[in-house]
Length: 266
Image 1 (cartoon, helix red, strand yellow):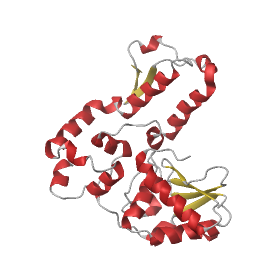
Image 2 (tube, rainbow, N blue to C red):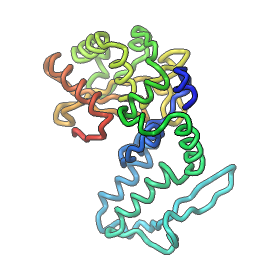
Image 3 (tube, rainbow, N blue to C red):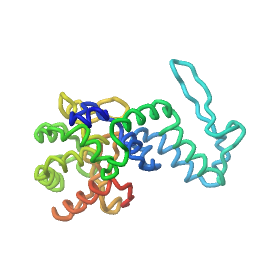
Image 4 (cartoon, helix red, strand yellow):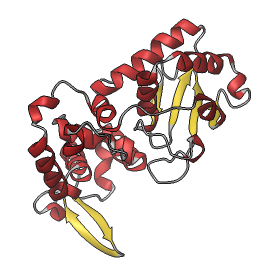
């Protein structure tokens, strides 16, 4: 990848978001886990909501891994099998789970990738980019067929009945159509986790589980959220019922551009 960037050649394959963060040396946040495994993310988040009752769940500082049908227990910390999770040490447990899932599982492979990459591209040269810009720099701006995108979009929630004919959805597509190539790519990154478009079009857009999950616009009330929010595992954007086009355009732009900062606007 480093050689391709040095020679100004594009890389056809797209990586998951947190790998670009590793290359840039950006911190991995808890919300990054949601992009690759929302079910696991929600289970850990559920433990936080249990308070003192978490000690009755019977969880310790280990995880179960299965490789080629063989199961093994991995200790997240030394002697983790002997440490029960309580309300007091729950933050340490969640941090250990995050570190293992986002780094520990493939630390050796990641180190080799970074050593090879930085052998060609000095790390300081990348400090001017965020992780979204790095993906676009390495993979290029995608050719997006707006007609294909709209035809292979599903609607749910408040937009389930009217679909693309709902006023807010009409505004959404008008705004997206007016975007330049970079903003369209950033919108894709925001909703799907990558700027890549399948070779066979949006009809075969995949989720993080490898199954086909079409781009989905899910209608929510303004009481639910003020800004658009994404669920990259499902390629879904929660789009509030805005009352006018200008408000939608402003809030959508903020959500897309702030995504790279890791700042939670909810």
